Length: 186
Image (tube, rainbow, N blue to C red; front, side):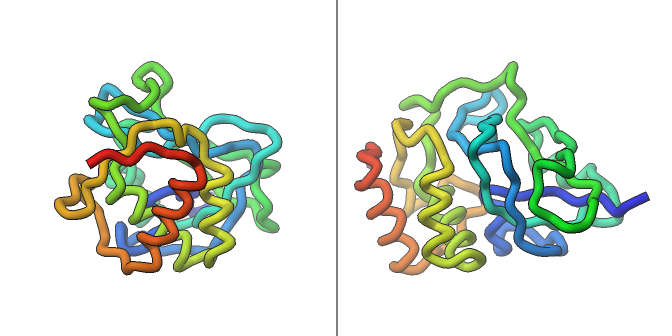
């Protein structure tokens, strides 16, 4: 049996948010990221939805000791789905999964359930580190839901795995949000 792996497409791209053994970068076809809120969380978060013409970048990592329990606990608001080999641009066949928010529990972000700027900064920091500026631009282009309210919690991060990105990351995030006409609220 192959060692199980997962495809991270959001905060899991930022290696500062976990200690999973990263195997390599990857691209998955047929999915796009989208901001959603779940009855299981108080704020919005990234998930994926099917989008046949879209390809998203992320990281493939091994599931430690082939034990999904810790990862499933971290991703408790998600369903773990196997990825068919035709969805990835990988040469070798892997036992590969991704996480998608549980459809019965999700809805659009709202003022009561906003996107956290600290979460977005953490994700973008990961994409910049792994994929460079072009990867950051592709992240914004392959993510939907930018009409969501965004709460500026940078001074007192609410996101539990928030990192402390430098000014370059914050400038990239702020510039991209302006270009998308996203609404950031204090």
